[in-house]
Structures are given as structure tokens and as C-alpha cells.
Image 1 (cartoon, helix red, strand yellow):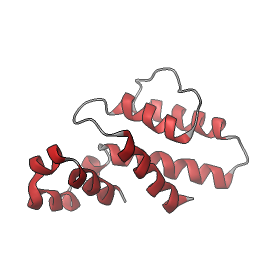
Image 2 (tube, one colour):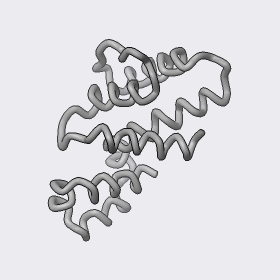
Image 3 (cartoon, helix red, strand yellow):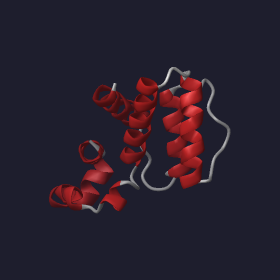
Length: 124
């Protein structure tokens, strides 16, 4: 899912599409896992997957789930700020993208929303 979302973002962004060119886009499939896990699509998929696993296994509120995810993500990336309000899955993901991956080519909110929905469909 991470690879397909990354390709979708590259193909839909004129700057990235030109930068990576056709043959380089396909190389993403050969990237090492550690590199794949550093791209925004991995952040989105990872948070959505964790959210749905916790949602199916527990009876706690969304707020508690997102707070638990935040505690874990802060151990991996200690930078943080105030949690978004209202605290929803999409708002939380956008916050973590801003905290963890605020460098590089900007990602449109439209792409983020589409990626969240694709991940939700896969894990819901």
C-alpha cells in the first residue's frame, strides 16, 4: 500500500513526476524497507493500521487510541507539539506528518485525505 500511494503521489505531482521520471518511479518497488518507512505514505498507513487494530481490539475511545499512538510515535520521533483539536484520525495524521516529515516537497491535503481513505478501506 505504501508503494502504491507513493507512486500515486509522484504521478499526480508535476514536480515529482518530472524529478523522478518514468523509470525512476518504478524503482520505488526496490527501495529498502527502512527507506520506504521514512516517506509520508508510510506514516499515513502506519497510523491508520495501528488505529484500526486498536479500534477492533479495545473498547476505548478514539481519543485514547490516538493518545496511545502519540505516546508510541514520540518514542520514535520525540518532536511534538500540541495535539490537534478536534482530535480526529485525519487531523492527527496531518499533525504527525507536520512533526515528522516537515521537509521536502509539500503534500496536498487532498492527497493526504485520499491516502487516509485508501488506508481506512484496507484496515477498517
